[in-house]
Structures are given as structure tokens and as C-alpha cells.
Image (cartoon, rainbow, N blue to C red; front, side, top):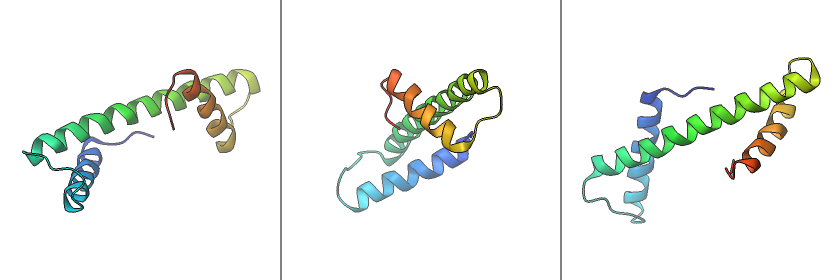
Length: 87
């Protein structure tokens, strides 16, 4: 699952706007806040893609077939735990 830069930026803008609307955070420059959230989201989506690929590779080797979605999800949890990444 890859996420386009436009989708990430759209999500970042929505997050920053919601945080500011609720008074939870105030960015001196909204564009800087959006860039910060965009970078963080992009890094996390990349890490998620890498974890999913690792899980599919491991399962493919051990099962000898394409894994089911629930199997991939469980293996992703294991891979993420090994890397201290919270899904």
C-alpha cells in the first residue's frame, strides 16, 4: 500500500487544521506545521510499507503460498514489535 505525496499532504493539512481548531496546538506558521506533519506521516507510511513487505516475504518463504490478509496482519505485528514500531 503506497500513499501518494498529495494524499499525505492532504491528511497533514487536515490534522494540523483540526489540532489548531480544537486549540490543542498552535503553529506560528501553519505551513511549517503542515510540513512537519507531512514529513512524519511520510516516514511512518514508508516504515509501514517496509514492515508489510517483510511480513509478506517471511510468510511466503514459510508457507510456500501467498499469505491471507489476516496472516499478513499478524506477521506485521511481529515484525513491528521486533523493530519497536507501534502499528
